[in-house]
Length: 471
Ligand code: DHB
Image 1 (cartoon, rainbow, N blue to C red):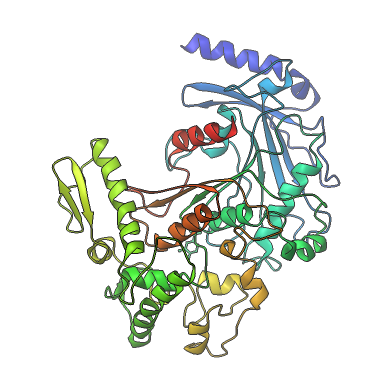
Image 2: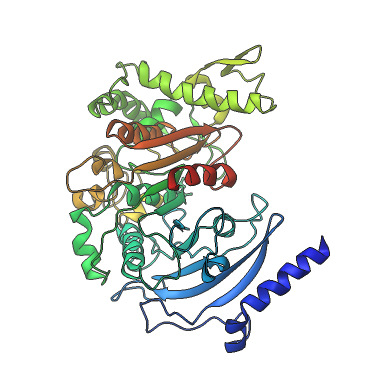
C-alpha cells in the first residue's frame, strides 16, 4: 500500500513538474490585476481523499468583479482535477468538457464567507466538500462572499456576489481548463443554504441587475443547473411564523444559557403561531393546507418527513425507539407528533426567532439593524425601530422568484434538514421544496435523523444524486 501511495505521489509530482519548476511548491501567485483566468499561474497539489490520491491544479484569489467595494473579499479559487490536462483524461466518467462545476459557498450566520480550500474535514471526518468534489471529477469554483459585518456587506451583497461569481465563470468559459458552464451547482448550509437557494431560484432576474452593474460583474447569464441546500435560514420575513407553529408552548430558549421567554416574547409566539395557517394557505400549495388551529395536510406532510427520516435510520440499524414524539411499531415508524417533537428538540430561539423585537438578531443586522416584518416593527422594543427597504427584503427571498416569468430557476434541487435542527422550522425548507415541485422543478427533500444544524455531512449520497442529474 505504502509503495503504491509513494508511486502515485511521484507520478503526481512528475505530472505537475511545469508548475513546480516555475515556482516553489506552495507559492500563491498574486493575480490582483487580473479578472480573467491566468493560464499559467497555478499550483499543483496531491491529497489523500479517503483512500484515493487526488491531484489537482489551483488558481487562487482571482478577483471576480471589476468594482468591488471590498476588493480583498471578492475573489475566487478554481480547482481542476489533474486528469483533465491530458488528452482523453477522465474522472468518474467526466471529461474536461463534461465535468460539472461545483460552486460551494462558505457563508454562515450571514457573515462573510471564505473560499473553500480542498482539505480533509475535521468535523465530519474524511475529505471536505471541495476535495471530495475533485475526487469525483468535478471542477470546483469557490468564491469568497461579502457578509453583514463588512462595511459593504449587508443585504443583498451576498447574492450579488454569488451571481457575479457565476457570471465570471461564464465569461471565462473558454479560458477555464475544464468544466461545463451549463452544469453549475451551488451548495451551502444555513445562511449559506439560504444563499444557495437564492442563487438557484433567481437566475437572470432583473431585480439584481443594478447591484451587479454597480460592482462591475460581467454581463452574462447567472442561472445555474442545480442547487444543493442544507438547513436554509430563508424566507426571513415569514420564518418567524412556522417557528412558533412548532415551538409555541415551549417557553425556555437556549441561545446561550437557558432562559425563559418574557411576556412580549410569549405574546409574539401566540400571535405568530396563529398567523401561520393563513400564510401557508396563501401560498396555494396544492394539496397542502392548514386549518386555523394549525392542523391539516401540511402538518401531516411535515410529520411524514420526520417519520421517513426515522424509518431510514431504523432500517440502517439505528435506535429510534423510546421517544415520546415518535411511534414505532415493530420495524415500522408509524407516527410523529409535532407538539411533542418541540419538547424533545427544545427551543433554540426566543420569539420572534428571526426579526427580534430588540432588533438585534443576525438577520436584523443583515438588513442594516432594521426590522423586516410588520409584526416586529409594530411591537419593537428597540429604541429607534426602523424597517428595511421592501425591495431589499424582496430580493433576499427565493420564494418570490420560483416560476416567475423572466427568471430561470435551477431545474434540480436537493434540500436537507436535520431532525435535531432548531435554528429554523422544517416547514421553511419544506415550503421551498413544495413551491419548486409545484412549479415543475425536481426537488428532493428529506429530513435527516440525528443531524443538528449542519450541512455537507452526506457527501457520497449528495454526489450520487449530482452524478445522476449531470449524466
Ligand atoms: C445561521 C444560523 C442561524 O440560527 C441564523 O439565525 C442565521 C444563520 C447560520 O448558521 O448560518
